[in-house]
Amino acid sequence: MNIIFYHPTFDAKPWIDGITKRLPQANVRVWNAADDEPADYALVWRPPHAMLAPRTQLKGIFALGAGVDAILTQEARQPGTLPAGVLLIRLEDTGMALQMQEYALASVLRYFRRMDEYQLFQQQKQWRPLAPHSRSDFTVGILGAGVLGSSVAQTLTGMKFTVRSWSRSAKSQEGVQSFFGDDQLEAFATGCKVLINLLPNTPRTAGILDHQLFTYLHHNAYLINLGRGGHLVEGDLLRALDSGQIAAATLDVFVEEPLPAMHPFWTHPRVSITPHVAADTLPEEAMDSIVNNILAIEAGREPAGRVDLARGY
Ligand code: NAP
Ligand code: GLV
Image (cartoon, rainbow, N blue to C red; front, side, top):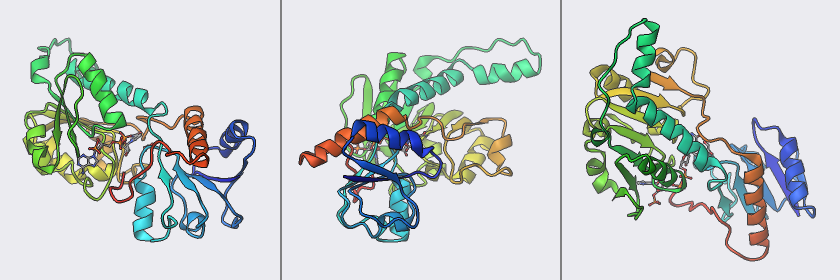
């Protein structure tokens, strides 16, 4: 069995060694532009067109992350990036859900406990107690109720927040009010004090964090974008911060990454930035999952995390 690996930033060695240790029968190699030798499986992140296009024999392509938008965008731009009919498999959880729970809870509590405001007061040497927020006035809405969105919802209900979710199909999650479909987006968002985005980036969800959606929220709402930069209409957020519709935003993902030095988000006093680290790919967990999936495919079973190419996630 031949496996090729490509990631623009990861150190490949632990992956080659780790897959080889788990699958001693496999010959695992780093792909380079001159490599057109046969391969059964490909492990990829942002693969160049030339890596996959000619490989009609591939039995599966494994995305080294949860989102597959970069691969599907590349396919839309340059059809044939994905060999016709190939299985595309993404990482489901593999340690990302816990990281998302940590990140989302830390961000919600920072706003709920007014830590961002106290940080500012400290810089001004102001001793100034503020009235605490009340939970009844602090509904959290989560866009996306999949692997990551539902795990964040569980953490927040555990902290006794009122939580809503929005997805394509109806959900039944204890303590979470489910909204679904475009028709229910307004009802979902109306009155939310915090909006957390954990949608996949697809043609249907791109630009969803826009002026219209912000107007449904509670005045002075908080935005936490953990999905993709392409979900956010950046100019609409800047205007909503100016008008007070959005009180503050925590952004982990951006249209252009790294965020350009001149971007106004860097210096905005009410925008908090992290460099796309809300939930990293954890190699050991990811390799366990990928190898289990390869064994499933070899045995004729359905792998976990298969991407529906028509839906785009
Ligand atoms: P997932 O399990 O596929 O969940 C996606 C959710 O979005 C599902 O609930 C789905 O609804 C919903 N959805 C998709 N399209 C929709 C639409 N048009 N209208 C309404 N709901 C829609 O994905 P996941 O594993 O939770 O990951 C979500 C995203 O998080 C990834 O795609 C990635 O972009 C992002 N992410 C970011 C980081 C980071 O570090 N910032 C790390 C990992 C992942 P249904 O359940 O009804 O299908
Ligand atoms: C990271 O953003 C991922 O999609 O895994």
